[in-house]
Length: 214
Image 1 (tube, one colour):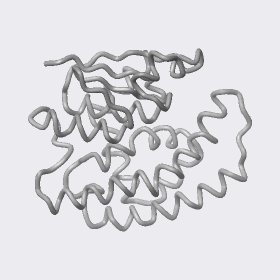
Image 2: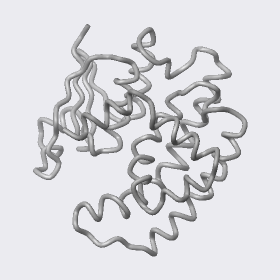
Image 3: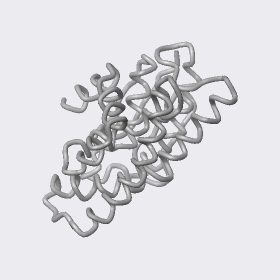
Image 4: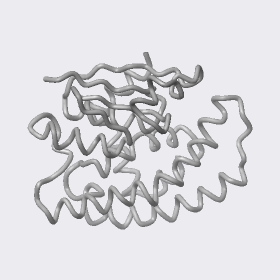
């Protein structure tokens, strides 16, 4: 097998998506730590892999990719026979999964990422949280999670009855937010709360957290 390399930091939600997908697929990889505080993601050597100067960057042999959700799609298809099936070949099921992957990317993530920055990243960096922004975006996230609560009353997971990329892509921001005051938004919705407990208990996520802790 051609060697897979993931360039990034496990503290990046985008890099985390890729790492968890690899753990779910039980595919071996090499992790190349990028020191973002030292500006390594803006150096020419890294920009050759991701011209936008953001993590992650991904290599599989002579294939180079960036954008985390595109990378997880590739991993899921290229290594379809290994580990957890994260995508389906059934066209109708695939369409439903794709809808909820888009919901994550377009509706959930912009709001969740803003809250993650205000409630988790800013305190970590010694910056002051803007609670007016938090209040605004907690309301926005609540609106999205109301839709999730209804959806999860219809199927066990967002994309259907099986865990898929539609669920996996949420894990990094969910993990950050569940350690902040925003956890109440997940916990007060029974179906959402059960879904969070389910996806965060997965062995692949546990492996990722162990990696992140080192």
